[in-house]
Length: 359
Image (cartoon, rainbow, N blue to C red):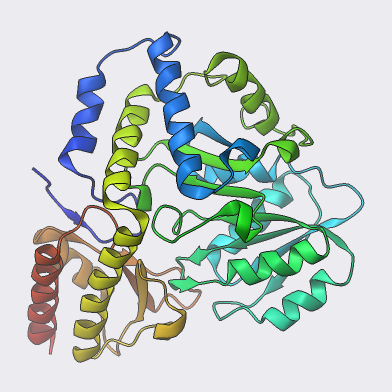
């Protein structure tokens, strides 16, 4: 039985089958043939969901968080004379800068703070000729904003720039076709919208670009991992085998539900939350037209105590998440994972009771 309904932006609630897969797969040596078969199956399923030309791409698995997958990409980029253009409108765009800076890779930020990306400004930077790569977060969960990755990638491709996308909170719910969308490298993970258990970082990238990568990290060497996997169907280092089994089951569930229906379900849950929260006086940080269907950030009303709000809901089985905005006056409600309408309605009933008693 599930003890808590997770309304944080990941890891998310998972189905009973996904959790049971961990036990059913059992104690298996990670170097046995069946483990390699499992990883190859996962790689193929991931590519099937994220690109229409799977033969041109590879899905690379790491035992890590999603940030590990992102670090594998960024630490491997063959940046030389030119720089990385990093488009920032939240904390996760800033994280990209921090990773690049750690590896002494030259990077220039266009910082839109927590607002919408001005595409005209981005185009001006891209056209300058100073950059070889563009990095951007698809769904920036600092605020819940959904960025126009397709347009950014199109502008980048006109100048032959390599496009790197953090799709941690968009892959497996929002339709993504890397080949048609102009995305060269994409980072995501086993939890969040994939609805698996945490522990597997996923990189999907063009095969030809992987072979041009540089290795600045031993563990996260993208090229070495791909080459080893292609020869052995194995990770270079010990994989989280049981987490892989849960991810395989989660991807099967995604195949049954379909990406379009998953997004439709998330959108329905998000709408329920937005309507009720508005009636209770909560103001969203991002306007509806720019907000994703998976998470919404809200400003704290005057006199609001988030810690009390959080603890009240936790006692009743629901987890909400603090904000990441610099002023510290926001919080977030995600609606991803194996959630049902009845759970969201129950959650909103408790929010209503809290606000009634608080006033």
